[in-house]
Length: 224
Image (cartoon, rainbow, N blue to C red; front, side, top):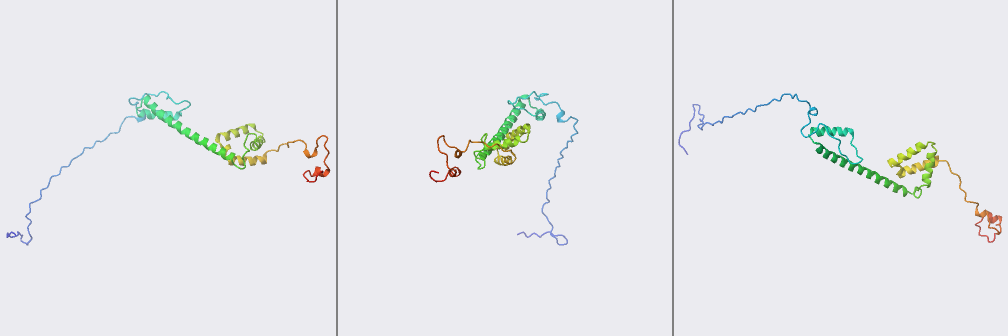
C-alpha cells in the first residue's frame, strides 16, 4: 500500500488523476441519392414487342374439337408479348392450358355420367318403380300419355330433351313424382277384353252347369 498522500483540492475533494479518455473521431458517410425523373416512355402495352416476340402471333395449334375463346386468345397474346415469348414458346403454354382444360372437362363429364348411372340404378330398384321402367311399361306409358295430353308435340320433345341433357329424368324422386301426377292427369285406356268368361261357356257336347254351379263355380257340391 502506497504512503503517498492522496491529492485533494482546497475543498477536500479527491482529484481524479486517471489519464483522459481518447475519443475516436467518427466519420459520417453520405450516401448520394438519385432522383428518378418521370419516364416519358409509353406504357408497357404500347411499347414495341420485346426481342423474340413477333408483332402478331399466328393461330395456335389446338387439339381436335377444341377452341379457344376469343377473349382468352387476345389476353394470352398480350401477356406473351410482354414476356417476349416467341411463337414456339407461346405454343408450349397453349398446349399446357388446353391439356389441363380437357382433363378438367373430362373429369366433370365422368362425374355427371356416374351420377346418372347411380340414379338409374336407384330408380330401377325402388319398390314403387321396380319392374315398371321398361319401354312400354306402366311408368313410361302413363307419363307419355300425360305429355300427349298437353297437345303440344314440340313442348313434349323439348321436355324430353331437357330431361336427357340434365339427367333429371333419371332421378327416382323425379320419376315417382311425375308418375303420380301423370296417373291423375292422364286419360284412362280402354278395357282390354280376354274373351268370354270360362264359367259362361261349356265345351261342345258337355252338359250345362246348374244355375248354382254357374253362380258359384267354386262350390264343393259334387255334380252341381
